[in-house]
Length: 221
Image (cartoon, rainbow, N blue to C red):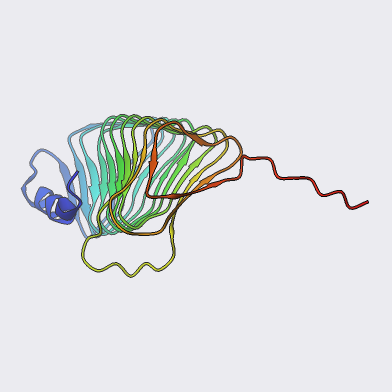
């Protein structure tokens, strides 16, 4: 994935895509249980998909959020200046990509591709990601038996980064990263393991803080 191309690709897609539901300066709402064939694109508005929906096409927003209700089946989810959030049991047949917003995936969800941000955090709750999870400046949190089958990648920075605190990758609640931790630039990264969280691959370029290790008991008597 070429992070430098994300905003341009999304904006060009808004202008040239045919056969899709496109809205300028307003939101797109798909009611519960509906199916749509074709992409959903909003400029300066949200894309809100209800529960038990099927969307055969990309759902994208340029200056708004993308929301997906419980048990819906969708394809690629993309946002430039907004968050992406799903409910429980959502199936994403593709990638989830945000430039300047948070990505939060609800319990029981699955992504067949990658999850990626530039400046936003990534939070996975009992979620399976079949490929990599990537970010430039965002924190990453895996909770409640989430699984990333690929790598966690901290990408090269884009332009000048104003971030001063370390990037944190927190793996908790029995969550597993099956691949490696890869840090592609000189930046402080902390890998925090707790409550049974683990990394099966190699850790390259990150400080490991393993809170799974039993701490000595101090007898105060």
